[in-house]
Every structure is written in C-alpha cells, then in structure tokens.
Length: 70
Image (cartoon, rainbow, N blue to C red):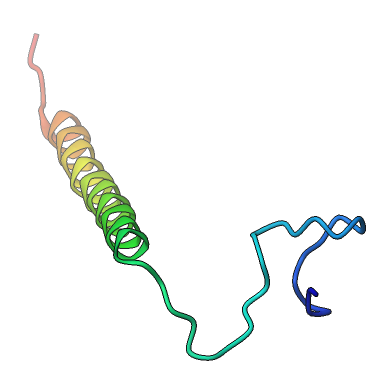
C-alpha cells in the first residue's frame, strides 16, 4: 500500500516503484555507484561550462581592447 505522499496515478501504479517501508532506506551497490557517476558527470559538465564561459569572456574582452590603425 502506498503512502499518501508517494506519487501514484490513482490506479495503484506508483510513479517511482514501491513506497519505502522502513528508515533508513537501503540501496543496492549498483544504485549507489550510478548515483555517484551521474553526480560526477553533472559536476564535470558544470565546471566545464564555467571554464568555457571564462575563456569566451576573456577572448571577447581581448578583441575589444585591440585598436586597429588604418
């Protein structure tokens, strides 16, 4: 039986699998590894975007600083 706060479609089908019945919730090793890998990917992409943004900003600033004499 699902708890009141666990998402359901009304027909008893739970959105995220069976509702937890105990605390602390136990996870399998593959779930823990998967969670860690996904977090590392998200952090790497975020850090990459910050580095890329800094690089682009420096290039744009350098282009504006150049004075061309004709």
